[in-house]
Image 1: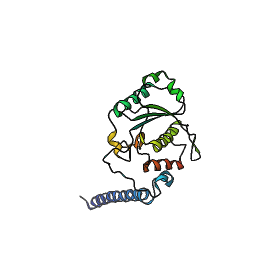
Image 2: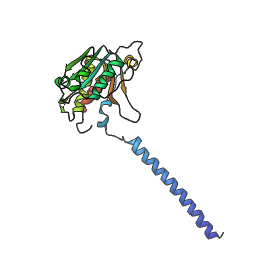
Image 3: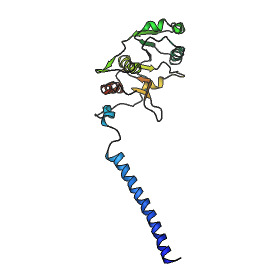
Image 4: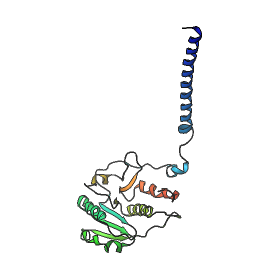
Length: 221
């Protein structure tokens, strides 16, 4: 190999390694700037966690101290659907609650439904009137689903028990979760879900959950 060709080859290899090293350094610098030096999200996004949080017990108690009361929330004028009927009856059959409560702002929409006949004879079933929230801490609620979220927290803070969405189908008893101050679903890779909540009425989580609505964002789902 001629000397000139050898020199060109060596320079090309050196340039390549230099470029690799430079790219590595730039990548590490970008990582530090994005993930370590500056926050990925605004403080506003994490408002509910930016204050000291009291110690929340995750201890499993020897006995179930969350009351065996099942709660459903129905807001609006929609008639009782067959899916709701199946969910309510499944909760009664599998959980065997001491009380099963349907909290509604228009209870006649429930009792006047064609499907009411399928659940009206369930023992210890009661309908409880609640007002549909229009605002939370002075901010107007943008969705009826958000109003339902507020009601379920208020209901659990008043009674304690097991809240179920109207399409949550119980296939076995939830009693083992009644030994904790709060139990809530958190599917892998997803946000915390409020479709099923088991909680004592003095749950610290419920208090913090409700307080987080002081920074409610009506533009977000």
